[in-house]
Image (cartoon, rainbow, N blue to C red):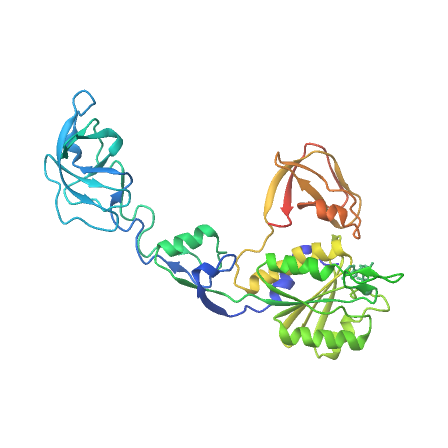
Length: 402
Ligand code: AMP
Ligand code: MG
């Protein structure tokens, strides 16, 4: 049996890095930067006001209070988007607004709430307070210097990074191509919902569940028609899925049952295939194959096993293909609200709920065909073989849908 770490390492090694494309910045959310992006301008780009008020010389307002205000002569207005050619000399000020450039001569801004213009004399401004030098001023480059790397290659683009890129002059970005992922479900018992079921048949659910996981990993999923348990149908389905995608994910048909055709189908297509027993529960059987340089991930048919093996072994590979440099599941610390035990000899990824108070409890029945607890769970606790954790023990929860 392979350890999980070994299996993840092999899965990562088996996938190619896809190419890149340049897309409008607005379309980059969730994608991965293919290059370091540098600031084309400093932020702020120039010394500017953090307040609506008056640009002044701090020396002029020394000792100013409500009782003994200092009167300054207002010599101009600097609306946002303009720059004043004038200079603030002793005894003068300029009307200024948030974001307007600080004019020559001024070294600070007094906010308008601390000033009063004389009725009938807009040019005289009475200042009721003193201000320190550079108070209410945003200094050029204090946030970002021109040329700073603002997003490193491999970073996932978020609203914040997109905002920073736009503010530093980027209209588009080179990002990793999204892997096209073909989803193939095998099993003669499987029926497309909501068609009628005959005795012994069940609704197919893995392709749909996996499509949502692929999309969360920023891949582009395509669901292919359900494949009955026959070698010919499996060969046809895999051939088409390989031709139209960068990777293929199958579910079912990878154990050693008589009706498991994924392995011979791959061999018939001239590909190679590695059959693993990964030491995790749920999800032991897992297939890694390739045909024509494209990877195939063969997941177990049990829905819970399919989800767990996808998150642990396929998701990292899909992220790597598009240029990601990190692929671990997000983790959140919590405290057990009840004991959890694993009497088996494989690591058990226990479906749990992690609530807003950080309390962690079992999401319900843990057998690999049980979907109720899968739907309720928002994470897993990785429970070592033959172990028991007590109520109150600290745990790390691996988040499912983050
Ligand atoms: P298998 O891995 O093909 O032996 O399937 C293991 C179990 O998972 C069986 O109970 C199957 O009926 C069930 N199963 C397999 N594929 C799917 C699927 N795509 N959707 C729902 N259940 C499935
Ligand atoms: Mg089957």
